[in-house]
Image (cartoon, rainbow, N blue to C red; front, side, top):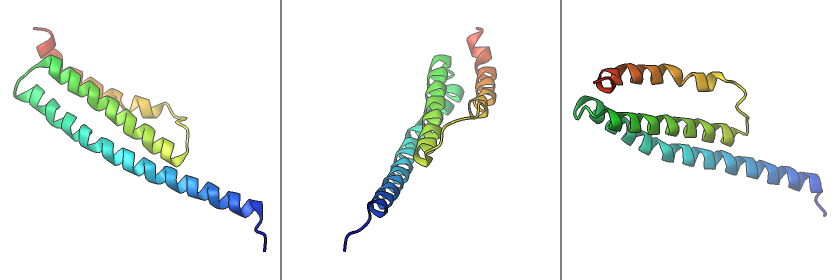
Length: 107
């Protein structure tokens, strides 16, 4: 019995999609631990050492990791980012961090 080429291609495409989704889960979960480290280091830099350069460094790195996690999740689902609201969602935390660091930056 000869199997049709369409069935094989459909199974191959489904296997690729499943592999892509599982890879996305693994990569996104692997990025969570560095993000947690950034959060702890950011809190230490802001409240204990009061070092604005370190706070900006760790805050910037945390933002990059958040964008990377969002990109991995979007890649693993096979969807393009079509909404600018995803990037605009980074503005309020950035403004809050700037507000917190402003007294240290203006000294």
